[in-house]
Image (cartoon, rainbow over all chains, first blue to last red; front, side, top):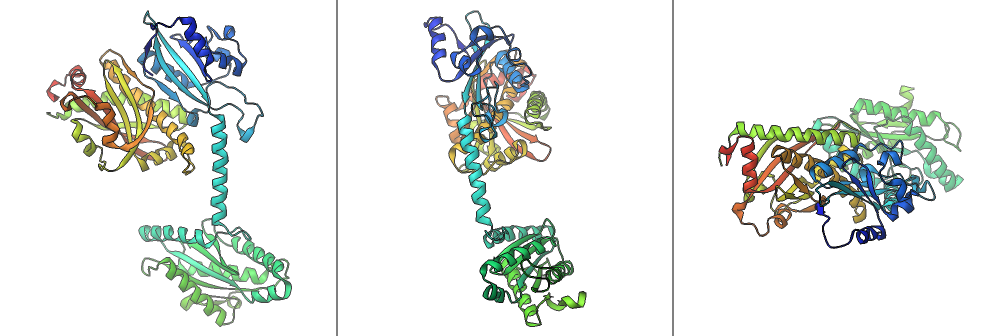
Amino acid sequence: MMAAQANDNAPIGLTRRIIDQVPIGVFVVDAQRRICHWNHWLEQKTGIPRESALDQTLEQLFPGLRKPRFHAALEAVLRHGASQILSQALNHFLIPIPIPHTGRHGIPMMRQHVHIAPLRDQTGQSFAVVSLIDVTDEVIRSSRLTELTQKLEHESNRDPLTNLYNRRFMWEWLVQQLRQSSRFDYPLACIMLDLDHFKRVNDRLGHAVGDQVLVSFTQVVRGRLRDSDILVRYGGEEFVALLPHCPLDLAMRSAWRIVRGVAQQALAPLGMGEMTCSAGVATYTKDSPLTGEELLKLADRRLYEAKNTGRNRVAGGNKDIAAVEWA
Amino acid sequence: MNESSLAYDALTEVFNVGLSRAATQLSELLDDQILIDIPHIQVLELDQVAEALDADAAETVCGVVQRMQGMAHGAALLVFHTEEAQTLLKALVGAVPSLLAEDMRKFEHEAISEIGNIIISSSVSTMADLLQGEIELSIPEYIEDRIDALIHPYIVGSSPGQILVVVMRANLRASQRAVSGSLVMLLGVNFVGRLLRSLGLEECL
């Protein structure tokens, strides 16, 4: 809207009535920032009648209101004729109007998108026309959609039983991490874990107990990894831990702590020592670069070496460790 | 056009003063220390703009436009490569959910529009103050298209020689990140002449 001359043929009374009919908030301020028009919509929404609003500043109407962006915008409009917007995204609102059913989605005040345009009267005096559009419903819809999207995103990346990451997430993560490892030259370790003779638990005690054991197992493992490591349910009773910035010997130690922890703790509802696990460790380094598939395949091969040499142990190429040796 | 670097330095300094006001406003609005500077200004012919913006003819760019009226007729556009706009939102406004639904993107567009509004207003009022006149600006609009398509509506009906383009690379730095956009002002050749003369830069035309 360009600075308009208020010199058209419409009588002032008619113009005022039109502004009173529009379903948005409109007020006008003069060069001294005093309100010289306050439309019907604002009267209804704020409960402040026109007579009380006229000749007041916005701060006088709403003590405690601090809106420096509004004043900078008024300056731009009144002094330079530069129209301004105050977006809902950055300002939330200009006029504090509590919304009914307070706290709908944690939004206590009406959200507003605000336009401020310059206006000149016949004598050349500057005014600013401020219009407010209520966008609260859009914001609530947006926040509901955002929550839903985040929930779906979370669910599509997680295993519902253990709440660990799933394979789908792991491949996306691994591609990015290997790129970083290659670029910044740091090792990335992969520990593949499998519960020993887990099938027997399911067969003897049922799948419900088997599921409980899997959840207990993930708690033991998670407690032995760093925050920056990720743990993935690879399938059934097979799990993958991926450890960025971790060379082979440190990864072997982490794997060993997990294997020993499982052997020395009760995986509820089983008793202590009733369940053990085996681990295979492989690393990506600049000297032995592997693709994601190759890294997983190597860790898997080492896991089966650990299984074939007695279980309850860690295999990592020429550095295999039986839990008993480190105990 | 004879590009005297000293002369353009003077013009750059004038705009940097205006943009420091925009930076103060943005810092207050976003509760972060925002710095804006324009290291370089060019005055170009229309057909040189895409190259100056480092934009492929087919690339979609986005930004904000405000029409100018009064002492200067034309338009001021703040243009970003699309990924720079996303980085800007993240750096200045925080995490923005990556939703595809159009009405969700509307809030991102509004945020970009207001940031552009502040930067464009400050720059244009700097020019107006320099020439002691008034340049009115329309309500800002979010825009997204190829650069030639963005510029087209503002040059319709003008012959190529009537319009000059002032292009400024604007660097915005927040505490975490820095992004660059370009401020593009489509102005009449006479107005650009007045602007340069006011700084004693006639030799640039």
